[in-house]
Amino acid sequence: MKKIFTFAIIAMIASLSFGQSLTPVNMTEKKSVIQREALVSSSTTQNKFATKEVTELVATRASQKYYDEGTGNWFIVLWDDLSFVFRFDIVTNNSAPLELGHTYTLADMDPGYSWYGLDVYTGVLYADATLTPKQGAYGTDYEATVTLVDGRSYHVTYTAHSPESKVHDIDVLAVQSQYYEAPHNVWDFTFNTKDYDFSFTFPNLDESGIEMDKVYTLDDMDTQASMFQKVKNLYIYFYKSVTFMATRGANGIDYIITAVDTFDETYNLTYTAPASPEPAKVVEMEFTKDETELVDYTSWFGTFQFNGKKEDGFKAYVSLMTFDDVPGNYTYRDVFVESTILYLNADDEEGVRCYDLTATVTEYEGGAYKAVVDYYGRDGVLYKLTFNYGDVPFSAINDITTEPGIKAVKTIKNGQVVIVKGDKMYNVAGQAIK
Image (cartoon, rainbow, N blue to C red; front, top):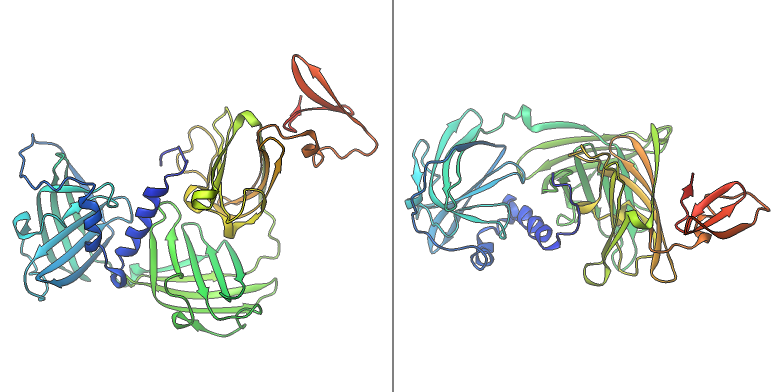
């Protein structure tokens, strides 16, 4: 994972729409090629390249759909979530399935719709390609060879999954729910697990919410707003069917959910409200104004991001969404997950994603901001983060020093403004000086 987590809004939007297009119920992938052709070279010249090493790849998912648009085309996609994606548009003029054991070459494909890349902005066309569908034990397997116009070569295999391997029993770490008032009248639930975030949206409900012990199905939900995504690559999946039930548990509301995605993968979710929500560990971290950056896209995209960086490599990126200004109180429902993560040290490549959050952002004169964030990491640790952007005044440290009757005095020490209160000393950002 690249350890620079600033905004890449355009690429993010392309990735999200791309993720939707791969589901069988939203096959608009071919139509998006019009955008791609404006950005990617449409040359189909069969250039000859020097022999290069072939990269071996194993696809974990495959989709196929027949398009009868003038000429009949079978559109095959092989991918491993969003690590790589290969598309093959095979012209058959026939809705009959592709012939098993037959090798289709680039001459059998529409080269304008056969390409490699995560989205329309990173697409690369094929200089050469083959695709062979095969009869597998649990469906159609595929083997493909691809040489891109930039010379890279790949050998890709896909094996259809057994029914047993497509059932996942998952424990839920945390649950967030939020009610959106009229005219929406919507209850939105998010279930955070180690590897996924599952969302279920219920329209046409009043503030009292869902009924206990009632089994809800996908018919009761907004199918376009109900989805789940992988934490690491944020690929979006939609549901084929859902059963959803909430019950009164010993310590709160428990949930039992079975969700089947559009690739027939089954996810059994269970959540039992814990007796004590206290984290196993608490880490406090404060960033001075020299360690804090604020990226403000509220006027353009309704999102802003606080970035904090320590010399030892600890980095915090917290992005929040708002339709107003930056100051305010925020919860996990306001988190822009695509650009919210912690890196614990210089060697941390995976980072710690967030499964719950509360934040308060206060504005001061001169465009200064103080953000106090409780960041519950998926590693079970509560990170209490404080960001100081600009010249946060002394009044902002009152939550740190609360000794009654002791007057604070501002003075100069070693050429810097410091604030002395009792036997403690602080800089203008409110950070204790040893």
